[in-house]
Length: 142
Image (cartoon, rainbow, N blue to C red):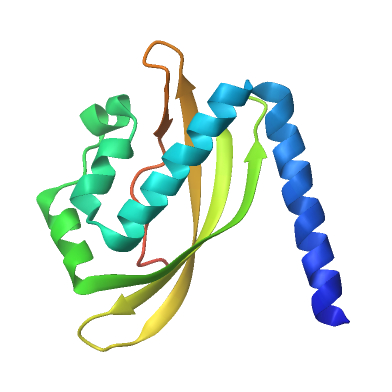
């Protein structure tokens, strides 16, 4: 019964999130956001952080690019899971998505979960979504 209540609450949260998004963006923009987020999540899960840099906002890449040291640090980790927990449209026209990432340290084989906040903005000129919060901080609290 408790599990059913949790599922119902999660379902209503997802519907509310979708309705919030539906009010602010066109169907095409929502579809493109979903496709971009899925591709980004797959890149984090199965690809490399160097590839994930391509999803970052170009302005952020210019002003605060990831260093070689930061990118090399990711090679010490394996991502074991990448799950969306919530999505919300913010008043400034951006979209915030919270994801839970399973991380395994390849040296110790210790696994832990990290919650990351992604922020996405629509680029009307490029007609695409950019993630502008930077690469995920998989070392939170360590």
